[in-house]
Length: 389
Image 1: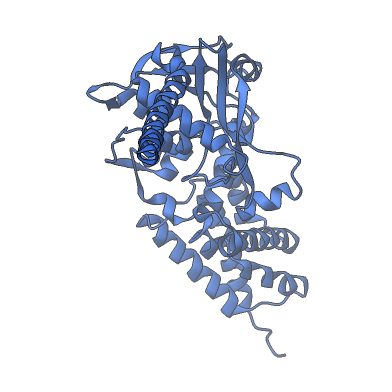
Image 2: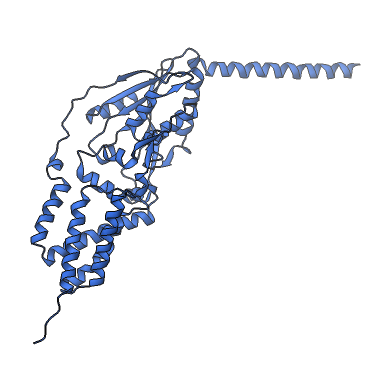
């Protein structure tokens, strides 16, 4: 009888311990969510206007988290990278440069952009307690050292797409209708005041950029992320509770010397000049410039990890074969087959452009004309044979 009583007492104690453990765990969970329970947390999306540096011309996005109960006001910034990283340029071109998520005090973040004369606008999100909790939890998970770093991709993985994907994880269904504009069109719209940069970017981007973009894809750009967030709903209500600007900046004119000496003007003037004056020394410089640029475009296609620079049909007109002209020009010799091949390549490039297989920068039109003049002059040389006396 004593053994049975002890056995019953042991079972009773185990049941009581299990019940108490559940109460303790529930109490811990309750305490950990007090800051959410009293709705002291606000989450917003920050959008920063374009800057003057190459890496800032498309703007920037970040997430702001305010916890009034804990006196926290910080920004999760997905656009951090180290300029001093070894082989920075090589890693960037190769697609191996690691970006990372950092946390900054909001006032420091705003001051940095104010000093750069860039507007910081805020969209405060209209989220439930559960949605806020899930979003903060996902941010904290991404901030862990083992998750903090990621390989940058201009279209698919940057400061804006990371925020888009985080919002999708809490149930926001962004629309995916096709736009009339291609991704190249969206990018070029930011570069109207920087025509030389626009020419360079369009030179290295491949034909995949000429497919029509979609509303969801367009969110790789901060302004379009802001636009789609403003148009979105969650649980039948507007996603954005309210909007505001967090700083005041002086508007400055974007007008610069680039607009005066734009590439289309410079190359058009050279085209007119080369119609009448195109000596061998200048032809060597042109052939060397195009040939080296062609090798660079080809190297990006073959070796870069950025998908955006692959399948780049600029290589057809910006052809490394122009390097073969150099020894011929130095020795005052010609090669009719080479000239004919390069004329055909220009013709193919024109058809590619006309049928929009890949859209070239408008500044390339006088460049193609210059190359046409070069090749026809070389063809004309090959048609001359010395006469016997």
